[in-house]
Length: 384
Image (cartoon, helix red, strand yellow):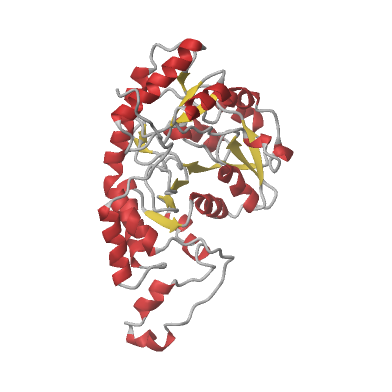
């Protein structure tokens, strides 16, 4: 390796190319860039890929989680169990629906929702649980399903960190009542911003198409199609608003990107798995820097790679001075001012997050960059 070479290694980077540009160009040429035919096409192809009956495209996973919880029309004030360590959107979903989040501690190894603490935090006011496949490592969905069924809880799977992986033969996102996915810029695949709601219960989620489109029962594209029906030709403009709606729709520009990304997702997952394997081999003998998760790159599809280090902040500073971007995913939500009112302990979360460091992981990461990161990690580990 050239010791004089300067590195500036990004934490995340989307895998975009000529195919995505051509797909967007097609939407430009058709002069339809809002909620249109490509959103419907993407929804159908996504459902085929996941192996579910129905999907609804939205503008973010945050919107997906909000609408997924709303689908059950839970009575106001009921409670939803969520892991302490996750992105804010997981806990905002019940709050948006006038429900109360109940923070559940995480397993110290997998950083997924703790089954033991789930039992402790459950009360008769709980109506749902939102497990998160943290970093792409599967939560114990068989055990969570058993717990949910015995307590009459609905399951909304937060799959923002993984796409395409299975757990015990069932695709992640299909274990629960509803699965929610993220296509944000940095995620496993992207539409720029975007999300998807998926389920085998079509009756549960198809009504959400009105909720995502300001409550309108017939979106713009469907009204366009109705013009071709002579009987309705003069009523193509007519629609009714019967439900509370939001401006959460996906658009055809995003779907144009998504249709191409969906073709690439398996190869992108394979590439990230190879990078993780290289990282794991490189840090195998370290004493003070350990993998963030019990990574199984041959079995699971991960969105992030991270390590644990007791001198986290010093390591972050050291890597930064050497041109290596890092992050921390995430601090426990109860430590944020907004969520502090629901702080109920979760001491495992509050202890382990202090060691978390996210390292660069994306499909454009070069072997020499990975080796350089490992080399710098070793330098720090040796001086620990």
